[in-house]
Length: 296
Length: 284
Image (cartoon, rainbow over all chains, first blue to last red; front, top):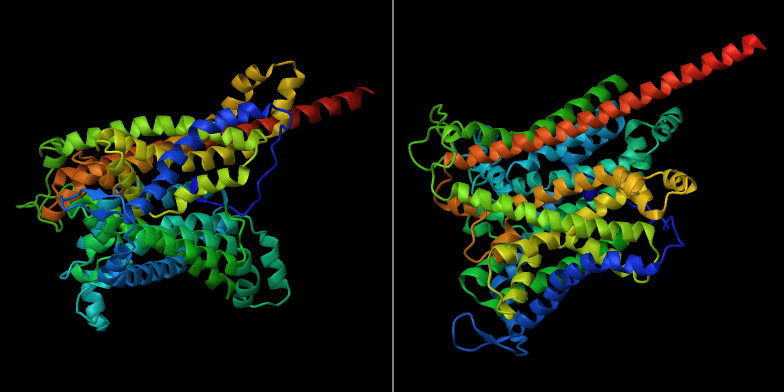
């Protein structure tokens, strides 16, 4: 599934330069038009909606410039942003730790089985996202073996996993794991194994080899993978709702409830605009600091 | 030390793979369950009821068929549009390449809840009725980017000398495309379409925002999750999983056999060439 692997290879120049540019524009127009109308313009509509004012009738709003919507949205749901980003951050960290060994194994020991192993990595996503998440209710059930094991160790503060933050973070970690494994694999697969041999020949310990050779060279994959995990995880509310409780709700829930149940479109839009805005800031700082701006 | 390390890695990789499949296995096992109520979260007893009577619960199969319909239509449109964009990106010079790339990358880096809600805001402001049409529009929107990236990767991996050879043999650009380029890119397009269908079929968040009263399969599952998911849902999901797995495994196998055949072919040609030159040498 190469689609999920934004690589850091730079754009190849067009192989045929002499062709009429007009055909190029004609090829681009329908697809890019679709994205412009149904992806880009809706952001503008979302922003306009976030400033609308109520008319008194339910679900009907008049054009306006009511910045107070943002204040109200923040005071009511501000804590959900913090919780969402903490959950998403933790899930991203755990996913990175879990994904790395598998990605490394497929890249360096996969041999002729590489293709098959990659198929196995994406295969779980063929089973419904919602049902796989729901399945964790069975796995983490209060009377189940997993909860029993951790309770025997005495590490569960609430004595259970289901309906706690632990279950939500575990669900997020699981669900977005393939999006971490694939980009990691893509950058590890490009790494020349002779570099590792050279490092070993120069008496570097395995830990030093990893720290000085493998990790730095896999950074583009780490950055792509963490983004592809963190961004969807911070907007997700399925895990929070199916595995958590009322105290683990994430920001996505608030957006959905306000849009669909309460029909409070301005507040819902303001919440959505702020989520996108925060993500854009976090992501651009992250990309700049990691020095991999060539992701697109 | 090195021996130990190698095996630790193998074991860790194996555990992670197993972990990926645990929930899938749970979904599959529970499809053979015989729960007394709708709460199908723990094991009660073996039953084939769900598999022999998949449409036994009202609404399940209707939503399933709805999702397949939406998946087919949106995949078709997204694949056509995405493939065209990929060709333009790889084969043509044009202004605004950066903006184009950004507009393709962004949908993959935007949380679904933001895409879903902003599209809903558009439809609400246009007072466009929600339903199958709006869901299809949404699915095409978020699938295009994945198609572009997949087809683009395939196009960039093409050996340009193949098309040059075709032109050298006086094929015009139309027949070069028809007989050389397209067949070479077709597996990439097929893969992109498969991915697109999988994304569309399984999408919940964006669909839910733009569905109105329409019920797709994931929306049915979401609704059922509040009051207990019927066993039939597990059976259908397991069926989908098995069919999709079979398709990609067969594709893998075909590609692998083709590669083997190609290698064997090259090897035999090498041998022929050697025999020929030996023959020529012995004659001279």
